[in-house]
Image 1 (cartoon, one colour):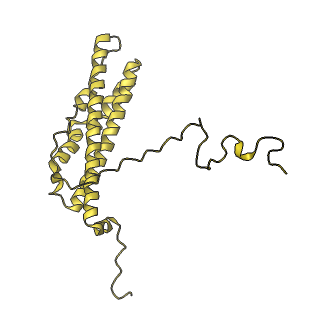
Image 2 (cartoon, helix red, strand yellow):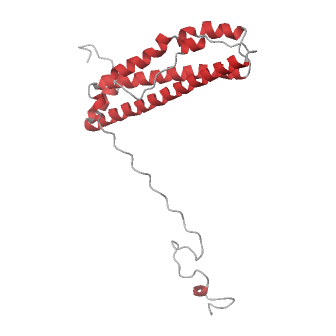
Image 3 (cartoon, helix red, strand yellow):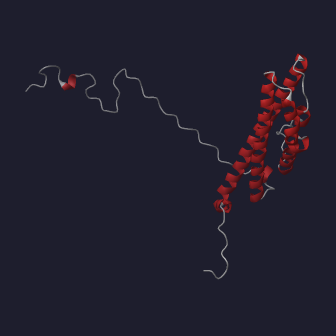
Length: 206
């Protein structure tokens, strides 16, 4: 039977002879997937040479704890800033501000973490912290627009300072993590020292 009966031969149909991998003429080309750029291999840093492995781990842990504290301070400032902008600060809220949260925002406590971290690894890129205790004791009469605006600017400026400080902590955490990875790459068995050890068995128990 003639293959052309009822229409054109199969080899005359559009696209005949193309393999499955070949697109039809005029078909949009498939986008090429870009390969992700290789990540740089962490290298040892001179700033951490004086730290033992345990000291480096403790430093990284202290950075994380300080970041948690700063995040908490930021939330406190942001909440008070929201209240001030909404005209809701005053009355009983004032007593809560100065009394309940004053121990958390003392200058001695706020600056202690920063001083300790700089003593371990000196850093010029860690910005100073605002004096939160003095700022927290400030209050503005809601009917005094100028005083309220000045306090609002001070709170917003302190919040930005905390944000900058927190960003610096994130950089330090990344650097400390990179230093740990570099040391593990040099001596892979060091990874085992981070694992919890099983309790020691008394002698003679088998």
